[in-house]
Length: 149
Image (cartoon, rainbow, N blue to C red; front, top):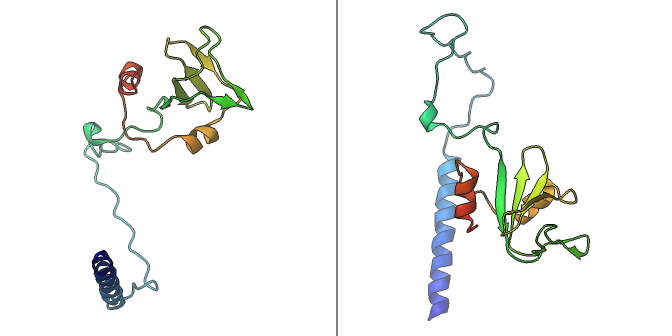
């Protein structure tokens, strides 16, 4: 019973794919021989060199200069070069917040709020172990609250 439904779904997906390929085959090819026209210079409302503010500031995503860094939660013990990393102030060895800063440094924050740099980690390690960015936080406290610290 389940096999028939799976076969039918597969057949429907194949037919939809074939229909899409046929649709693309009928589209006219772009004319690469004719160069695109040069865009008209923008009309400025103000003086020379003034560029309008587009899109408005409230619709813009933060630029990379406004982002101070990335953070993720690391609940299990953090093992670096074969040794478990512990907080130098309180000895905690799990439940870290890991920060990847703009200056390519990695910082660790334990549950007690102690911050320490970790020179043996780099942004490549952070990128391999973190998930996609799912939230932007206006302040550090908002980010820590979101991560449960």
